[in-house]
Figure 1: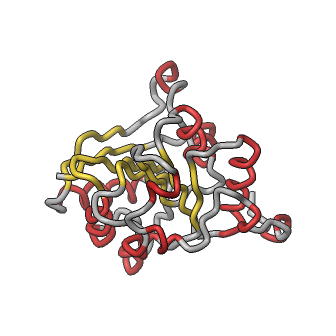
Figure 2 (figure 1 turned 90 degrees about the horizontal axis):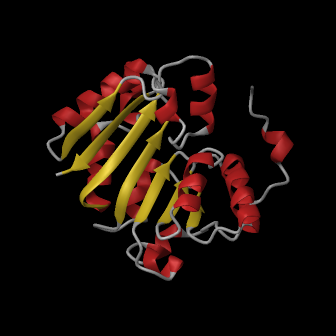
Figure 3 (figure 1 turned 90 degrees about the vertical axis):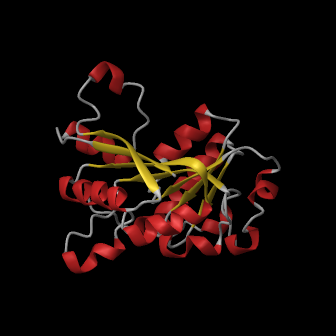
Length: 214
């Protein structure tokens, strides 16, 4: 179903307590935002927030930041956070290519990349969130021995991503799963995204890899 921006034109990110308007001001100081020193995990491209919100609900002793470049979609995430009264999650309307402007060295404990835009044309490869250029950016603010988890239903993007992690000496590829929901019993405990639920119900295979910062 096509997303109709006009249906949500009344939403304003500034109306949500979880929204951080000037994230550059908190580079190296995110513990002050959450008023604790808990581990901080981020999802780049959070959509409406189903995945990251569920993580925040299950793990109250961790902090989370949901990042989305489409403001109206991010506002829907903010609405849900308000409804639930969650205090361990913040939302940012920001570009993945500029994350070094808002995160300092060794500040992030884990990165989630879920169903990112595949940018199928070869000339757009550098825009993929698993391109080696961006893996180097993530490396700078990930803590040592921290992880990147990536999920997609796009086989070409997945194979591209595996190769990017393998050739990048800053990461070790820890695991690769070519059909994450094959075991339906185990699948029940997996935290899913909105797209993941849709594609899984369509019978699409869901691919996942986990990579560790060296």
